[in-house]
Length: 241
Image (tube, rainbow, N blue to C red; front, side):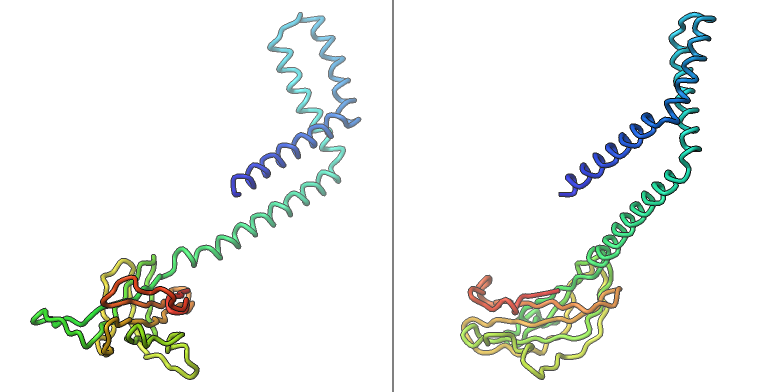
């Protein structure tokens, strides 16, 4: 698509230049000027003889001089055309700059992701199957600040049709943590109880801001014991911005 637009733009420029050159060449000012110089050139050729290099150089100078004479005579219309061309160029530049400004935050912003697993005792390495640890990581290009979170663990059979954090009146847990790009996965909370059941699903949402002061969120649903068992789950469990 971009290549096609670029090709169309090049063709338009070439056609425009061709039309301008045709207009100049067919104008009475240019033709009269050229005829006058042709008569003088014929006289010089009779005196000096047919020298190809001089002929080419002489005709090039004639074209330039007649072109300048055309510009002088048609100063008003050419100024108007130049003004129109400048307006078109300015509009095109403005549109390109606007697209770049809109595109930059998407490329340079933070992208926070969350997840986790069972809590592990840092001293003994024992796994605590009763608690879920919520973790966070930034894989964007600039720092991101987590401002709130929600985390739940429910058995697959008891999973609500929509996430509990979307219920009217729900208030997420306030939080403040700045996460640098490419940093390690870090825990946010380790006190989410794991419900009793054969297939517990941890789910939640992280709300965060980027360096452009825009608020985003990342939602996750994570089967703790049976990976990839999310068939038929509502899309709101995993949507992000």
